[in-house]
Amino acid sequence: MTNLKKKGDITIFLILGVILAFILLFFAVTNSRKTDTLKQDLQMDQQADQIKFYVTECLTDIGQDVIFNKIGLQGGYIDPDFNNKYGSYESVPWLKSGYVKIPYWYTDGEDISPTLTEIETKLSRYIAVEAQKCLDFNDLTIGGKISYPTPNYQDNKFEFNKEKSSVNVSINANDVSILYNMPIKITNNENVVTIEKFSTVLQIPLKSNLELANNILQEMKLMNADLNQICIDSGRSSKLDVIYHNDMLIIHDFTTYVGSKYRRTFTLQFGIKGHIVKNRYIICIYANIY
Image 1: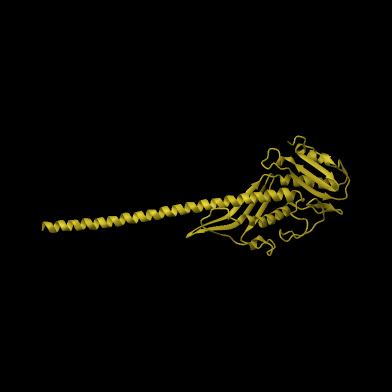
Image 2 (image 1 turned 90 degrees about the vertical axis):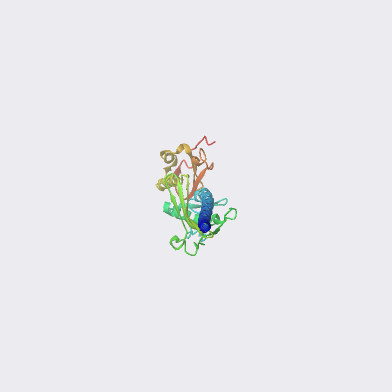
């Protein structure tokens, strides 16, 4: 009887031991899966951060380049001619200076200068097209599969409501903000992360220079305008060169050079025909540029 009891006790202990082993194994497997999941989530988040940083930096470079080298030098236009690629469906008179097409803002007694809203639209369309270059992730170390919609801007006449991606540019008092909507999906096994919005802010005084240029144009339409006084009245004469020569008005803004990360002078220029102007050469000189 004693031997039977001992055998029964051993059996119970063996059963309990097996149960305990299964419980420990269950928790070990569960914890391992949780750890793997956490690692995958962390990797996915890191990959998403890589993509967000890459696209944002690319967007910033495109924005700076187009504002300095096109919108400024070409008087608010990406291209004064018809240009289907960038959604420029109008053509305005322009004069050539080197590789730059300088549009007329005033000719034949008519003010044809672009509005702020029109310039925002031109910028949005241009950046939408060029931002597709920001979607080449070959240089990044991404473990999962990357997918995003292919835009069809030209065929849709840049009606962003027909697309899954869009760009919105806002020319603000002291800067230019860019919002890029492009759903980029990273898929790794069953894990999916989607990044949709990318934004950047450029500290470029585009609006103040457009306003100054428009003020000068309005005064010139009155005939016999004194550009020097206009420049002084703007309160920015110590930071500007304003030049009117050979039917071109050119504004050099040195605030984007002196004390700025850009180290580039912002230039806005456009053509004007048919007006008499006092002080028609160099007005408002900033002597201490360097």
